Length: 138
Image (cartoon, rainbow, N blue to C red; front, side, top):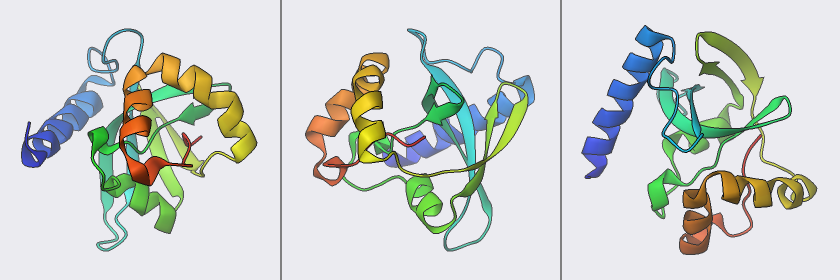
């Protein structure tokens, strides 16, 4: 799929997720869950919503800036680096969050579970040099 196609798919997924309150579109199979992350655009200042696979971890929600295996970082990751205050929606419930990267100790604890939970994250971590030393984000 082209980058444009992925963007269109993401927008459609986000609209369906919002309209259906997450029903039918809150998972990508094999138990992997999807949330909606709304960040503030670092250039536009406008809200930007992206559907993302996440891993529950206690009261945290782990997301990973893989950008589908591309070398460039996802826009939502860059947005969070500028403005860490964001909103996530899981099902019909919205949470205001303060995003942050995992600490090295958290990474050591989380990563074995994360790469088992979503094997694509493991593949991306091995493939993409910008992810070296980066960790899933609670």
